[in-house]
Length: 205
Image 1 (cartoon, rainbow, N blue to C red):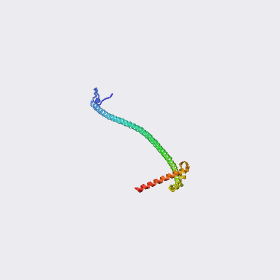
Image 2 (image 1 turned 90 degrees about the horizontal axis):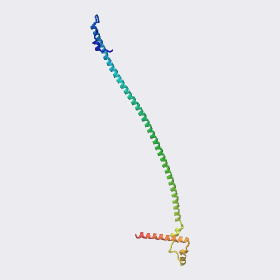
Image 3 (image 1 turned 90 degrees about the vertical axis):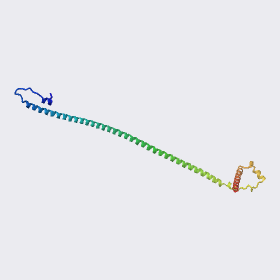
Image 4 (image 1 turned 180 degrees about the vertical axis):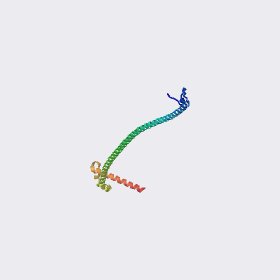
């Protein structure tokens, strides 16, 4: 059973003969009431302090939980970031290696093709040189032929033509060598005539 300071202070007792001194009892009860009031005030203060401590502790626990959750999330995010970075780095390295291999292979292939083309050009150049040399040598041999001296020294006006020679020179009676020789003589005569005409044209101008 609880008592309030006011109840203690205002408590009334039955009066009996030869009982306690009323003033002393009243004074004691008053002091007791004040003490109880003081204790109640202290108790309230302590309750307030305890409540504040509990609130602070609760806040601390909440903050601690928040920090713990944040650390867990940060650690998880860090692990995910590391994993993603490692995966991306691996992908970049693989791509770089693939690009490097492709570039090297392309370079080797281009070098091989260039080598083949160079060798083919050298081979074709040798063939062209050989054929050109043969052509030039053939032309030189043709220029060195004695027939040129014959053609250049051939004088139609100095040739003695008789009826017997005319009969011999008939086309049906000529041999192949004579036909070729006559054809060469005609070509030489035509070239000489053309040269003379060109020279005359130049002098006329």
